[in-house]
Length: 77
Image 1 (cartoon, helix red, strand yellow):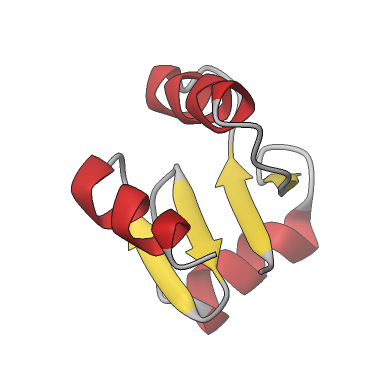
Image 2: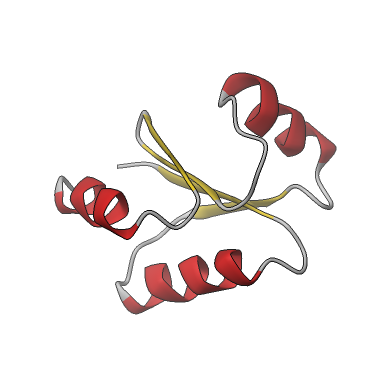
């Protein structure tokens, strides 16, 4: 299972999600779109997402803190 998290500086929901994933012992790759222009363009144009946090679990894209959707996707692993 590949998990990618797109975040930005000063984003409380991003911090919440990072803490949640850490508590669940879930490994993920973080891309800070405030500092990584390539990641920002990927999030916008490939994932069709314009806000953070954006979470990609395998091929499933979850925008925002949608806990039911996130938990369901993580249970598949």
